[in-house]
Image (cartoon, rainbow, N blue to C red; front, side, top):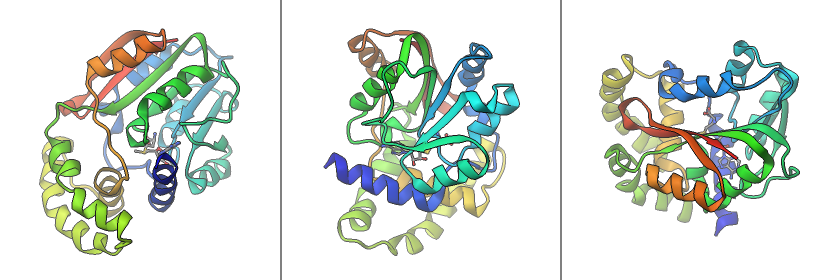
Length: 249
Ligand SMILES: C[S@@+](CC[C@H](N)C(=O)[O-])C[C@H]1O[C@@H](n2cnc3c(N)ncnc32)[C@H](O)[C@@H]1O
């Protein structure tokens, strides 16, 4: 089962190249910049589930040398895109990373582990590859936001048809329909309508994604405790969409 979810995720994210959305993504990642501020010039940063590299560009603009950054993703097309942009990038599954223990000083995983079959296993892997006293930035879906019950949980028949009955063209009907709901919400929360590419990426990521686990702060604290890590900061993002945290290994 966990192999199927990883295979499905690979297929899905290969199609949509999640990364560049036409709104100010930094507003939804306030702790990320505190985290980047902790990185010294010669330290190694890994972004696991980096997508097509929206944030990789942000890290460089922030002043982190490109050669100290590595992106890892399950989608080969994301990895190719990053390599073409001159980044260190490798194919990998967060559930079973082909990286040595303590490889990273700083590890980021933004919007990824909730899409796996076993988020705790993914969390353990992120801890394993980060050195003791290194730091991890984690961003996951917030279970207290009703949005996910409407957009993800209630839409399970669509996902069932898409993945289990191979009715891939269901997207051609449901996506245009869903835009009439998405767009007023986008205007309200983001101050703008989404362009088609961004709206489709969010639709595939939130509705069609093979898995979307929901987290509470308590659950993240229990993961950290089981892995002997310490949560330094934990915070809901704007509009309570995500829970972001900085965790010391
Ligand atoms: C919502 S996107 C987030 C991308 C990026 N972190 C960002 O914020 O722009 C989720 C990403 O996780 C990747 N992903 C999903 N399952 C994965 C897995 N098991 N291992 C590694 N990457 C995975 C997808 O390919 C996709 O690029």
